[in-house]
Length: 129
Image (cartoon, rainbow, N blue to C red; front, top):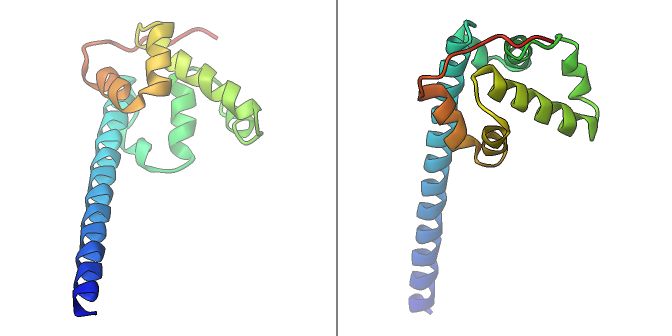
């Protein structure tokens, strides 16, 4: 009986350690993404701190991609929001001189491609409507 309790305790400790490791990795990725967004906002001539404030960060992103602020409400509509977000990500890609392939990278491998966008030497160009 004691051996079973010892094995259970060891298994619980291992699971807690793995869980803590996963939380630490996700926290590090979250901090890294904040740094990337801050850098992207700064490259686009916007205040970097704006990426930290919910809703306002999206309004600033709309300003970066040269779309009106009321597009925020389109993102609140189910299914329409998917299309609008893809359009916004594509315009973000175009704003930094990237193409459709880079947009796909931002959509599916966002940690890597947002880091590339933040730290490469691309420059921001405001798109026409």
